[in-house]
Image (cartoon, rainbow, N blue to C red; front, top):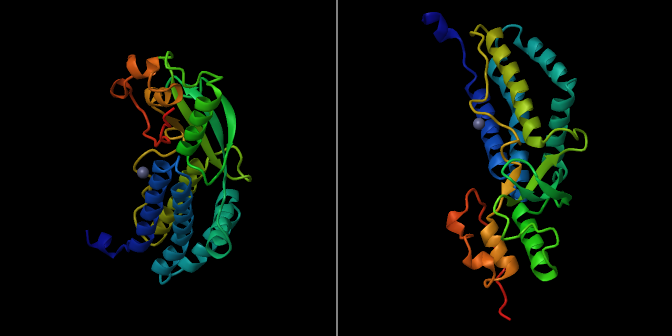
Amino acid sequence: MAEDLLVPIPHSTLDRLNEAHWQLHQMEEHFHRADPFRWALNGFLRAIKEVPQLLLMEFQNHPGFPDWHRQMREQLANDPLLSYLFRTRDVIVHQKMLMPNSKGFFGITRGHGIKCGFGWKFDPMEDSDRLMNRMATLAREGGDMMGFFDPHDEDTMTCVERTWRLPEFPDDDLVDLSAKAWHRIAADVAQAIERVGGTRSEIKLSCPHGSEGVKLRRYDRAELAKYVYGPGSKAASGPYSPSSTIASAKMELPPVEKA
Ligand SMILES: [Zn+2]
């Protein structure tokens, strides 16, 4: 309809919102790789803060929009999560790198959640695979005290569970906070489009996001047992061949020294 053609679409704003969505995917994909995770988080924080600025640039000539936008900015400034994330973005851009807290567990799982393990404070610059590597090496050299690499345990998988959090929001993972922030900003964009005469329609993430699906990283028990117990163990000759093991993360193990 001709009327629809007159309704402006904030292309740059929506593009930046899509970019922030893409960074959310990067955060999940690299959840267990410390540097890429932090860099994706930085990218998300930069992109999401630019959305309101682009919105003003694209709609500033609509009567009354700058006033509406000012109120929107005030509301964002009073939103504890958004105001904190925006300030954090400024620190990243102008002052220093962001080091979130990373905690979790090392242990065994039946597939979902930790069945048995112990809490671990991760170095925010260390990959989960490196931690697993160190634990396997410790067990190889000092004994597998907890049985986390026991080749006879067919029911569980060795795993790492991890979280990334900010001290100011200790109950929520950064992936979940970021998805929440995205929806908050997207709601403002939707309102702005309606404000300049567009149709009100919800702008939502097209796919589910959250830490729940990525926080647990499972490892190939057979590969680990072979390394920890040695190539002559039952792990090497029994039913624990890598090809019969499911859902395992590939990791580099240090070369086994010959006796
Ligand atoms: Zn998505």
